[in-house]
Image 1: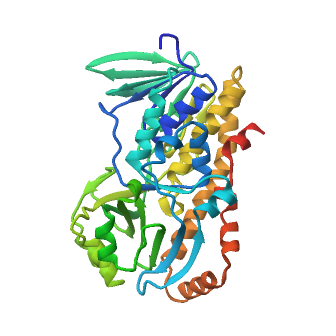
Image 2: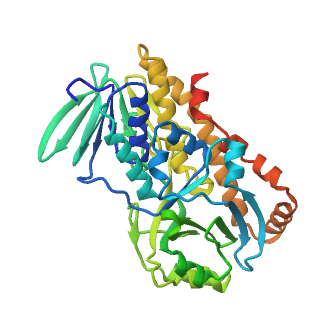
Length: 406
């Protein structure tokens, strides 16, 4: 790519790669700078609801993801102490019929690989690894980056800088004064274990064809299949502290096992599974109410703009929506980029804020105790499946691309 690209993207994660693919659909070139020398994704599983998969499908990513993804048949809510089911939301064919796209669960590395493979097929996308954006500012009304690569520094100017550098974004300071993410007081323990081992340890607690969420005042645990159904992903959200601002750390899992043991023995056995190597992740958030853009040519997307806790399972979904909407508006207002940026922020903030509120509500109800938990259980048991699915129409049925074109 010899000509100046339409955009420079910092970060080759889910948000950055999706942004590049979305721009390429509008015949807009981009260059991605990624500080890691090699592109690989850490972490475990994630959920991709129909609002995200419909967009990935249009970018040609879903086809490459299908072999490793799993389409669960339901989301089941259970009491962690007794394993008694409270309710379930149908997925599978029911999700496809109602919301027009599949609900999938995947390993994060598989999503990263599918996005990367698709990006490498696009001549309009250039990916530069081992490149650190060590400085950034605005010069002559445009973003300017200082890129350090192989010990040499290069100055790069661009009409549009897309910051997709995550929850600990260094570029966030260009748009707002409150730049640091905030620790929520919760940590996520994650492990992936072979499906046969998980089913043997958990007995009837989990099923390999659905997402199961266990609710308890001290924690909630989510289990679902990934890697083509060969493994079960476990995510336990508990109050706690971690020593470092690192995205993933190995740590002593004794406190987690003790917490799960306070519920049903089956969950304790899952936690102690032979192949369950637990990693702890601090859960940080970034206030979506603060600025996302600068009219000189800056846009924050994904966690750089609005890291939301995972209680609504929409981290990847919101990043994918952000990237799609931004690309659509940049293409629509090619001669007025500041108009595109203002429209992007105006459209996305209410949506992400609503998702954040839903996540906060989930956290409150899933960790409820006493009378609140009794009311929660009673309400869930009496609600019909139709009513439960209707609760998600605003979230899963949303078409971010269509909304940005109106």
